[in-house]
Image (cartoon, rainbow, N blue to C red; front, side, top):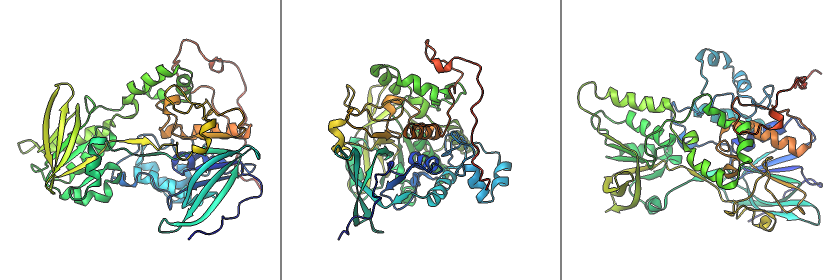
Length: 470
């Protein structure tokens, strides 16, 4: 039984955030000191968690710790990773550890520390619909407050001048494998849920990992480390032509700068689509350290003679799959280069098949008449990360990590989260609470250099210290 709507402010809020993942958590942290901004963030989960099924021991995030929620926009913020370490009295151990890339579990703990302290975050709040009210010139956000069991407890409506969407991605299961996931019996799990089912997977006689990206590599390495030598019974397959390392050269990393994002956004739509497909190794490859650890573990098992019972085959796709009785799975494989087919019988499957953007259509159905779309019916998104809407809509709908098709490979990258959040806040306030650099890369990505990239003599902008001097 639901209760009456909760009390909301009489006047519209300035901002409603939908979803509390790292991107919107970054926005909330940078919005916190802006006293003039009335903001609230809704999330249907009971608390913050970041890929809990992949917090494998020893796994690190693929960006340096400076790519926290705030530092690359405001190094003086109290919500930085270094301040988190200071609050936990761990600064000196971290200093001596000399770690540039921190463990996933530590990044998750840091984000939870921020989420538990920041005001304005409303967990257990499911957003049901968003509409534009032309009479009041505001957005209406309908939401449901959930109880501890996830059941509806109270209904609410919030009026707001602006919205930011940060609903993230959902695990993706290819069509040929969907029937296997839904059926009971043999363990078939997505990598997103790996740790929850790890014991059952390890207990299986033969295990197949599908997917040649970072998650697939981490799961394969974890399984390999916990299987007996000579009796590993592991198979790792993926569609890419190689178990390829992620591009990590210094100039290659400049594809994850604001400079490249602006360059990419200005390109023609067909060019952008070709680039996103061709640049998979920039953001879907495997960390070189993980590849090295896999090879080291395999090599260690050859010391006493023989080869480990592990098969690693790239360039393979799963055509169809089915269950054999109730105890095994048969995968029908196709090798893309050889144009050959075979069958693989296995006792458990881990699907490291990635994620897809959560669809916005249901949530934004009430805004559909106002949304301007490209030739592929995707929402158009401007340089300030705003949906391009009909001019009659005076408010803004910003998006976070949903702009791969307009802003390029940096869209899901944690390293650009703070810069994007600062860009959104600068746009919302009409001021510049977070001065941002005009140049961030040595590379000039086009022949025509933007005007703001031309070197000129100027005084550095004076930053207001955030230290309380009272």
